[in-house]
Length: 196
Image (tube, rainbow, N blue to C red; front, side, top):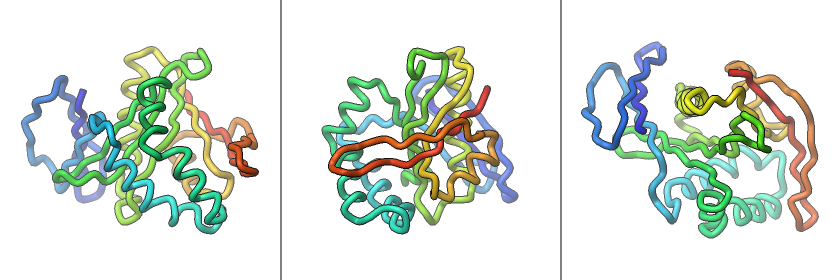
């Protein structure tokens, strides 16, 4: 499934769906963003975006040592392949004019409940605030509805400014958790949920 998102001048969102892999592009607004599944087994674009965004997003909340550790733990090629192939995380890309601007990953039936867990969502810094993150979430919501999922759940660092974004699109804080990720490091997160 490929999802086209057209962003008009005032950034109102209009969505077009097409099933399959052949898409006829139409110029219906100022920008056309294509949301599609990642097919690159080396996760080149995903790794590049993570490498660009993580130092900006987390440099004031995590040490460089923890950043390096987490990047290797979460974004090495073997780790991403494990997430996609064994854990069944789905990876989607937001693309404009053949340039990948962001990505998300998620899984269905998280913890054997009818909820989608959004594991990752990152947009290049110079494209944040332009509707791309919302487009990725909307794509996931549409898939959730097709699969009879009842809600979305995600974790976010307690000091991450993305909390405001999630709240603006209907997520609320449902819990807090500290996750031991090894090597003496933890993730200190809010759990946020949205009913669909």
